[in-house]
Image (cartoon, rainbow over all chains, first blue to last red; front, top):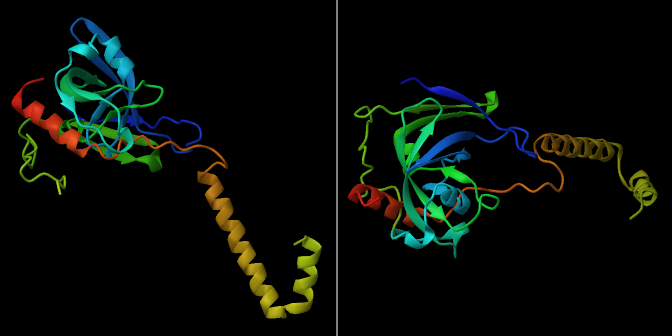
Length: 156
Length: 70
């Protein structure tokens, strides 16, 4: 599978633009296409509340709660697994934190867990493009399951 | 202080060398302002999307994935 180039999306007032990619999300019989920010600074993938509803998730039925903090302090979030297609790549299961904030307040984000576990990304803002390449199974240098014992996160 | 007052003050209290230095300083200041204006629009709001402080949630999310409960 080869890499694909995507254009930065210009959003006023950013003169350079943002690395936003349209992603297709599937859950049961439903499908939506939404813009998502490729955010290497985000610890995890984020799904705004209304996108989850459009996909048919039921907030009241969620069981896998996630702790929230920082900018999302006070928000509620649940873990959901969603089949996702980016560009023409093979569909992949991405785990999202489904947050009780709408898409006009919170962007859909592709973050470290688990988007960056499956894709190599090169940002070239100076060329107005970013490149995404799926990591072939078995081709990863490190532990594909992202060993939590030697995690980068500081639990102290 | 009004511009006329500043001008008067500069005229009588600064030496030629100091006046030249002042011109250089103001030129640098204007260049810096111009450079910044290429990147930042005055009074525009620049939102930050990255949800900081979600590291614990990320660990939990990975645990759910590892345990196959999603």
